[in-house]
Length: 62
Image 1 (cartoon, rainbow, N blue to C red):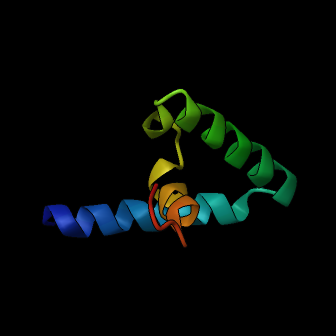
Image 2 (cartoon, helix red, strand yellow):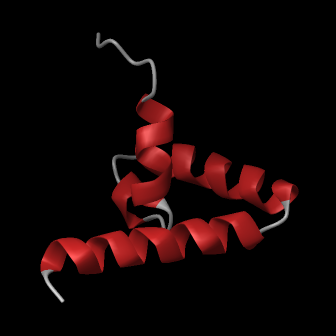
């Protein structure tokens, strides 16, 4: 399995884990993600690869 296929597989696994979480837990997790991003360490969050594209949707820059 090449690196890209492994990455897609892990992305799919993250999505399944996220989807299995109750909405309230997803909201808490997203809030924690935002807190970590404000500290400059958002990439340490378990769902970073899943949440960062969502957080940047519509962003046009400073």
